[in-house]
Amino acid sequence: MHPSSAATPYGPPVPYGLLDTASARWRRRLAGPDSDERAHWRTRTWYYQAVAELFAEPTPGRFTWRDVVAAVRPRGSRSTFYDVAGRKAKHTLVEEMLGTGTSTATQLALCYLRTAAVDQLVDETKVWSYWPYRQGWLDQLQPDSDPAAAESLVCVLTEWAIRNPGLAQAVGYAPPVCAVEDLVLIRRGRISPNRAFGTLTGALRAAAGPLGEVPGGVLASVRDDLGTAPTRTAVPDTLLVGLAEQIYGLREELRTLRPEQAGTMRELATALVRDAAELLAEEPAEESGTDLRRLDADRPGAGRRAR
Image 1 (cartoon, rainbow, N blue to C red):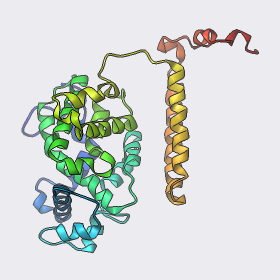
Image 2: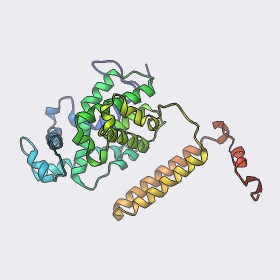
Image 3: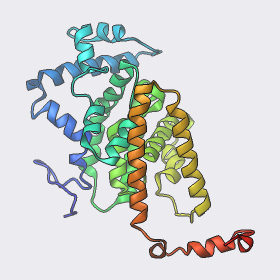
């Protein structure tokens, strides 16, 4: 058995620790063995269903919390809406991810911080709607099949997006956070949370266009970003420039946020960069097979550099 596999009560082991993701723990804790026994989860599902129905309309558009409340069955209210979504909501998925304390979950949570309560509710509705597709994918997943598992995830996500186009395209084509979390796990460190988020966002965008009608078209469009295409040697300078651009972009993005939100994100980002620096320090250049001194000497003008 794969070391990160876990047996299910009614089926074969599920690999990669996918039964113990932050998303899975959140849902399991709220829903319990029988969702009808958990009043709060039942209320959440009423709101998720309402949002899904609003996006299923022929021409879905922007809607407010009042529209959501009006669509809830058997009944909705302002108080229960803000129990489910918003700054003071109880048991949100983003709150769960931030509470794990892991670098991966924290980075993912930063991708899903929303200022609008409705957008936060839409993110969770995507997870709720996608979950049956995820379950079917897990039932077929095999251990030690990283590239195939990643590609099958994209195919399942594409199927969900084609069947739920309005919901899939909402909030800037943000993918269900559970799918992003799964992708990071099955790629075993070969893809960062931010890159996984961007890759699956690209998949949803592709699914909404002509590629969504071509078998394998969406997968082909993201295979390079997914990291399952034939590998190409990366140029060290290109990697460093890309890293610098991301840091600069984050700094500029922080300037657009409210001071308290910017402060929180700055602290989290600083901690992530510090962790990354420590990780890089643990891998000396000579162990990677790359002689950085030789690369430096090959650069134009390197021989004239002052010592």
